[in-house]
Amino acid sequence: MIGRRVLLLGLVMMTGLLLETTLLGGMTLGGTQPELVLLIVVALGMAEGPAAGAVAGFVGGFATDMLLDLPKGLSSLVFTSVGYAVGALREHYEGTSAWLTIIIAGLATAAGVIGYGAVSVLFGLDGLVPVEVVRHAGLAAVYSMLLAPFVLPAVRRVGERLRPRKVVRL
Amino acid sequence: MLRLNERTRRVRLLLVVLLLASLALVTIDFRSDGDGPLTRIGNAVASVFGPLQDGLSSITQPVGNFFAGFGQVGSLKDRVRALQEELALLKQDQSRVLDVFAENERLRALLDIKERLGLKTTAATVIGRDGSNFQQSIVIDIGTKEGVRKDMPVIGGEGLVGRVIQASSSTSTVLLIVDPSSDVAVRVAETGEVGVLAGGGRRDMRLTLLNPNAIVTAGDTVVTASYRPTRSGSSVFPEAIPIGTISRVDPPGGNVTRRAFVKPAVDFTTLDFVLVVTGVGTPRPVASPAASGSASPVPSPGASR
Image 1 (cartoon, rainbow over the protein chains, first blue to last red):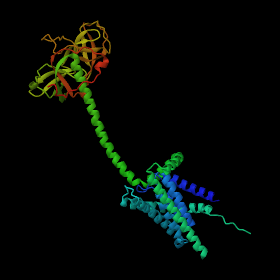
Image 2 (cartoon, chains in turn brown, green):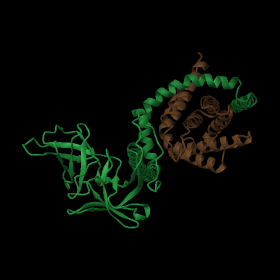
Image 3 (cartoon, rainbow over the protein chains, first blue to last red):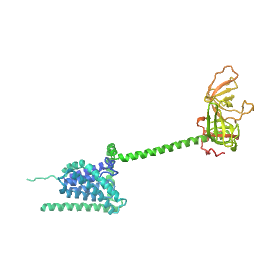
Image 4 (spheres, rainbow over the protein chains, first blue to last red):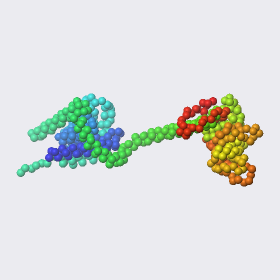
């Protein structure tokens, strides 16, 4: 059962990454590409809670680092934190307006981009300009808010399949 | 309540484990310096992912491009404007380059005819034209200071242009061979038949052959002959300068002469550089086409002055 859930999660992340690098790769907003994998992580955290958010963040970050040839572990570190945080805070916004959910998705994306920039600086990676990181974070947030109405419901449906089935013992 | 705390603790433990795993990945990756197990796994995964990416990309690219166009309207407009400006500049450059190429070709032709005929010449630039109905002449930018004298022949890259009819200290007037008052002693290169070529104005020049039974055909080449039926009894033109080709021949009509029409080799409408023939030297021996086609240094119009 766990294997099936991990496989499904991996497939979702792979699909997100494929779409991020192909279809959405050329559709930049002010030169910024969408952070679709991060948005999926945020959506899973929102729908399924901190544990699912953290696991999705780790898997999504790991896949991103591996497939985009980024420094290994950095995206996992950031996405895991974001997925967990969004899930842990969901009791504060769950059941409120859809607009707030979309705005939180945008803010979480921005936090993820800024977090990645900060972690990169901490680990001594050169070439990141703080102003550019903030600009990208803002644009990625806007992009996530535009994609959220489509991504959040789809991920919620996938999340339902990821849930462990309750076994009733008689 | 206890179960909730237990659950929270387990989730936090999961978070710590995942964060530690991430940090372990970072450490392994940094220590391996780009050649570790993670890099190899990444390469292996990328080799599987790459074809998928290519396949999906080829399917979704048109859709992506369509939507990308909306997001990039502003920047695309700027890009189009910049490219249009660049295109205009490139067109100007191209036109200049083509002009220089054409000029280079004309100068090469001048140099070639000068060497082929073994002529001593002085280069000149055409600075004026008289295209009236009364006289067809050009004005060149050299005169007696440069050694130009009346009756000196003037040639272009393709052949004979005319002769100097007036020379001031710094400019000269050249009567074109197409002027109706011009006459030149000529020879048909293929048959050796001689005659006199008179300018035809805006029409083809008239060739009067001395032999009424001369056999000439359209397409034959007409060159200068060292014969001129003038009072002076000699030609002002050196021999064998190309003039043009016979365009039409009148049928024999029992006259003492025979008439044909000649299309000049030189295009007088585009003439810009000419050579004034100041003397005759040694002609260049006939070379193979390959050798004659080799590049030779091309002087500027004033180089041989």
